[in-house]
Amino acid sequence: MLLRQLFDPASSTYTYLLGDGTTRCALLIDTVFEQFERDRALLHELDLTLTHTLETHVHADHVTAAWRFEQTLGSKIVLSARSGASGGDLYVDDGDVIEAGAATLTVRATPGHTNGCLTYVTKNRSIAFTGDALLIRSAGRTDFQQGDASALYRSIREKIFTLPDDCLLYPAHDYAGRTLTTVGEEKRWNPRIGGDASESDFTGYMSNLGLPHPKQIDVAVPANLVCGRPAAGAARDEPAWGPVVHTFAGGLEVDPVWVAEHRGAVTILDVRDGAELTGDLGRIEDSLHIPLGELRTRVGEVPRDKPVVCVCRSGRRSAQACAILATAGVGDVANSAGGMIRWRALRL
Image 1 (cartoon, helix red, strand yellow):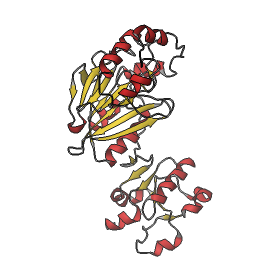
Image 2 (cartoon, one colour):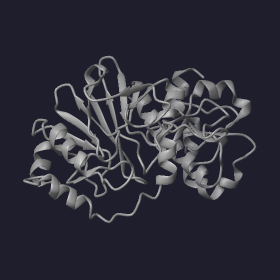
Image 3 (cartoon, helix red, strand yellow):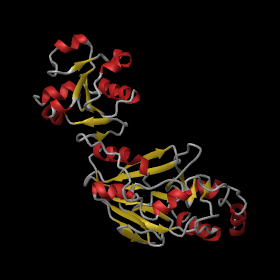
């Protein structure tokens, strides 16, 4: 099984990508709306087909990207039958199974933080994704959104602490930079529910946290109750001028074949050093030449009446050129994927 842990710094949310190395099918757990392009790019770069997006619960601190993935990649939205959310494709409860080859997960209902909290466990019980039910040395708060400290105590004790002690636990959030823990660690060291903590110990602790409500709760909860579907007429941020794709590194790329076929519709900016233009890779006819080292001071020479496609030898320097242009306010800009090496290989 392929596993990637991704992080959204704005909400301290972990998104998990699980994939089967043979079938190339993949799952995403707890996506974030603003990180849609990042996650889609990673799926593309790892040659994975997204079959399902899974929610551990209806989040109050960020909006899910489940609807965006359903619309663009055709993946199915999975969430708890007790969540109260509409727009899902597969509503699951305790004991249900999401089939994805090596990434197959079994559902354990772990209510308490919310009614619809779920923990997803791998087939061999070596990994569990606990959402907000059990956090690293902590537990999900129970003072809003159907919170019930007694129910959460039972969920953790009966559904998570009964997993093997060496089972790796991946939470939905962490606010201190920690990435994972184990069942054994939390059973021993969790200050809220570990050791000999009784139900009354836990409920007393949880009743006196005194935390402020999440800043995004008024936006996030209504949006997540419809699986992240935006209001009618909401703007989309997809580039419209060409088949531009987002890379996992955060840049924008366009296929050189498309560029070659639409040369009149774009400005091609070559950012190589001057001596490279007469080398074996040649130069694209009618391209504008500004070396990368001079681009910041000469950015005013770049036309803005058409989208700009940056190119260099391999696509590395031109990716940085795209970032410089974007910072300077050039809106429609993308990197020619693979640079002149790929351009030449394709005989363009």
